[in-house]
Image 1 (cartoon, one colour):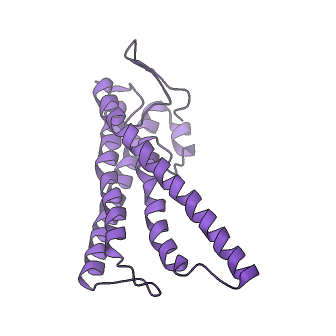
Image 2: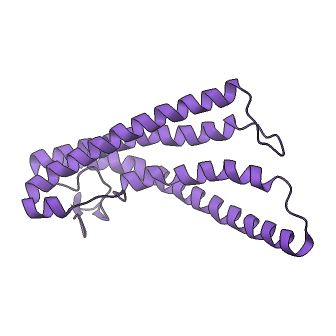
Length: 190
């Protein structure tokens, strides 16, 4: 039973890791450009024209690119002191509650991203200095946020199954997985 949820989680894993890697790579490049911009401003009084506009668009994607991997790997903020005092079974049910609240949160955020992106598209919003149309950038960010919804649904389903059966890593991708024996080993659940 836990293997089906694990297979669903593992199906998402490579693409979420690549998205996080690309987001991190974009962050490194934008940091280098920002340092270059600051140096050129300071020493040559010649800032990189339009970088302030571009950086706002780049950071919108950079920030959301890590959300899917974070959700799938269980790196979201959790408070576990209550569950640790109530025992394993209660902890599993508290994890279900947390997973459902996170799912609801991402549904609402995705909905608002869609509303924002549509508003930017219909108003032909552009950046102030170099007049780049903003909605395509926000469409990418919106699509990434929308991917968080099915990922968190898989996590919530896995957490529910673990609460019912007491088996498995929940909906998270476990830290270690042995494909040969089709069994999982978890080094740090709580």
